[in-house]
Image (cartoon, rainbow, N blue to C red; front, side, top):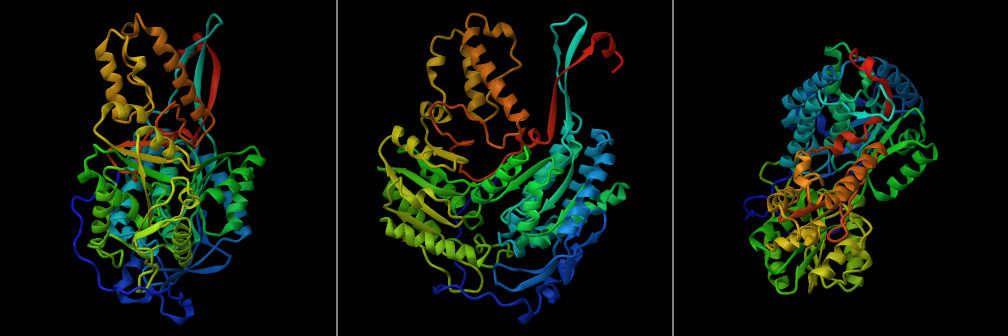
Length: 589
């Protein structure tokens, strides 16, 4: 989980004048950064002036040559030759052949390979983090932290590789049993976005690999160097283990390659991370062929602070959630609901905190705020600010482009909008925070839920009853119970945001006398969990009758961040349910 900074910083980088955006220089008009002495470390990652963007056991590429740029100064870094359609066809064939080898490797041995990938990433974590800062634009601590997320999920996957199993269930037939068996799905296509160019691939890749799948990666064209550098690290591990390199293939490319992946029946599962607009198109293309997809799309996340909130927690949490990664996270806080009794004080504190943010080159270790990724993002930022003004909003901080090289904009706070203003219901991938007043719990919970993009949500309060209403539970289910210890166990588990089921290890005797209440809920939640696994649903199946309708529900922490958990494994296995095997044969399995 991302951490809230302990202190707000007090130094502002030089350059305070504001102006319009600068034009991006053409690659041929400037020396590539990779050839400059201060960026010589790029070559330690195996990068060159021109890089091949296709890997399927060997490197190549016959498509268009693109140049990637540094968002902090709009200078060209290096070039990448993308995949052609012919390259894609060749890579898919090689990946499917590699699957025949990889699927036969025992799961714990697959986990050992993934462990080695994690170790290889550890060795390059600082330099990869530098590359993320240089090419994507996020600050260094986030760039390094993103690589650490890939390392962490490798560690998680290693453990899972020894835990893939299924229960043995009773059969209606004498001498028979039902065995639940999980199998790999085959070829997993992974399309990732610019904002997390390492971590999102890692979440998919590590879990898919231990499940016995092979991967075909298409990263964002604007972060192609990161895709190439990461794949070079993985390829070396596969080579050292004498395994086909096509187990982890790469096809750098644009919409043509992404469309081919979505329509290709040979891609057994397609994981897409990106905008809701493009995700909808991907979903339709995959569904047209009755394929499987995992979609991680947008978010329009809200933080709610009640009158009893600890403002020493609220202010730095909001700052981090709204400004981190320059507002370019799916979990970025874009709406802030403040109780009318604390609204003015919190806004004033936020304005002071925003003024203390250190701005600069994202790879400098003392900088806390970097640029937007592209000039297009700057234009969308300006358009959103103007739309907010037209709908009655007041910009109380920021709202302009910074007068410095690169794609820097001022982190922005807007007040005075109606809760249902169209701009507030639109996800803008930029550091704009819309602030609203509310009077009571009922209306603000409804306002949190009224947007289409539900992902993450947070409240700040000390009221335990309100916390549980936010989580979606009504205490009427507990009022007549005669076992207070069990009630406390359920409450403790929910407060710590674990799985919906409170404590499945409790003996059945614990439910005697009121089993009818819990049986319904346990069955219902287990059934929903099974659907989530069997149908490869990317959405968190929430069944909260009240409270937040988001998949991630936080209490006294911000909306940003991610935790490794069971959701990572669900999509990469296919369930063969109710396979019957005679009991006499089971002794020999």
